[in-house]
Amino acid sequence: MASGTETSGSGDIARTLELLWDTGPRPSRGPKPGLTLERIVEAAVEVADREGLGAVSMRRIATELGTGTMSLYRYVPGKGELLDLMLDRVQRPSENPADLGDGAWRSALHALGHATLALYRRHSWLLEVNQSRPVLGPSALEGMERVLARIKPMGLTDPELLSVILLVDGYVVGAARTQVYAEEAERTSGLTDAQFWEAQEPTLVKAMTSGRYPVLAGMSDDTFGPGFDHFEFGLQRILDGLEVFVAAREAEDARRPPAGSAPPEQPA
Image (cartoon, rainbow, N blue to C red; front, side, top):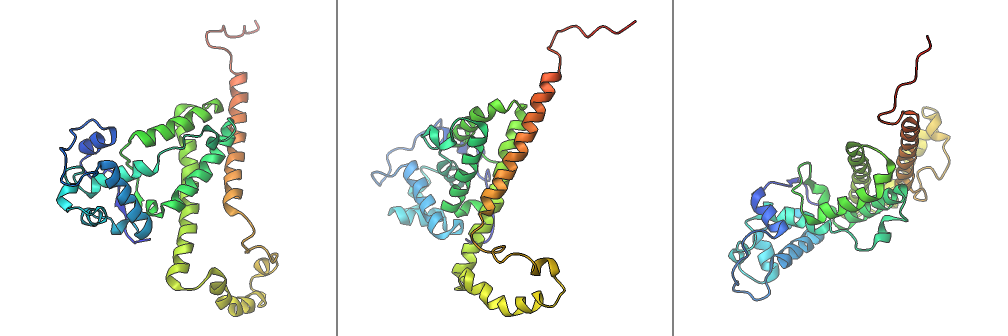
């Protein structure tokens, strides 16, 4: 994964929105038959998937498509706008309703967590993009609409529902970054994960037998092994916490008198 960070919304926002929502002028027939905005975006995503976001440029995408760079500018103004189109392209939600669980809000959030992790694993260049100010296109809004429809029964306020999605996404981004960085370290160093820890083993054994780290030395042999699913454990604990919060909110709502009801009479 290339170093550096790109920023969503860094292009002409008005033109980006026209391209995302197909409300702007269409380019006249170009010199290369079959060249479309969709094909340009797909080619850019393919290059980013293979080589990282730093490899994406208008010149490089033109080369991939076998056309001149100026031909691409008939469809998209530049890399800033292209990046926002790429982001919306990879966020297209699944058409299968079952991919968001069995209908319960917890199941939907669990499925969302795993789907988002898979998205970052397929397109690790997403971790290079500052998406604090996204330009929202149809794919992003459709995905959010489907998730919100599933978690609406939580009974939370609208800002709280949005915060729930941000909570899960923030957790997944951190987990994805750890996984992707580990794979990158193995690829660039030439050492497998096992070889990396084997190189440290003699020093760590001495440290554990020194008596300075009694808690660490007393931990089970499988503590740092690959058999424990840290991602699933953390995701389940987030969902457990949300269940407690939802139950407390339901109890609070049940105690609240109905709107418009008269207050109870006070004793004389």
